[in-house]
Image 1 (cartoon, rainbow, N blue to C red):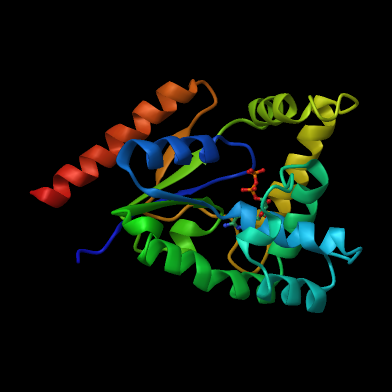
Image 2 (tube, protein in one colour):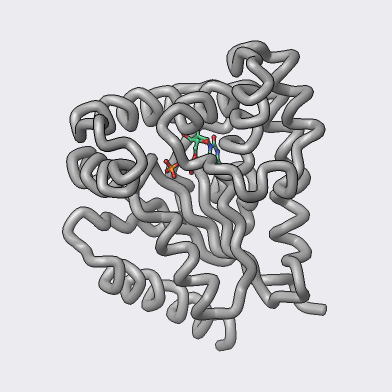
Length: 219
Ligand code: CDP
């Protein structure tokens, strides 16, 4: 069996990497893992139990017993869970507990898929440093805040775009500054700035890079 293909997408909050990752996975028939949902899921379990996401012992225990099924159907894309996810994600015990699951997903994608697409903050640097193709997806803070504001506002009509921008900047700063697996662009990653790109244009740009790598692998 050949090694599965792995596509890694990292980047700051709401940069468009999740949408792009899903489109890439659907186009090539690969399995998709939103690794942010693992950190959000752990944060959700803690908040639901009334536990402090800063408590390293409790957070690690929640990460150890975590499974995606445990949070199925829960709305983990909220503002509060995003902030708590970034707190638990800074803790080495939590990251260690979630690492094997992510690596195993990439090594043996579910349903025999020939490849896996993972998006997050440390996929190209820590989780899958040997990924076939790596992207670092960025966009200006204003555009990212706009996109996230539009996603959240139906459920939260009181929310302002300025609040969303402040949330994103706080989370990005924490994610980039943490000692353990900080958000970082891998040296061999392709930088993709989606500030002025539609989803389709970003997808076309990503496909050109991926198809180019596949062609070189075949030669
Ligand atoms: O969708 P969005 O970009 O807002 O965030 P997410 O991908 O759902 O991730 C939520 C939080 O989980 C991030 O702010 C990070 O703190 C953390 N995370 C991480 O540390 N490492 C990953 N591979 C993925 C997410």
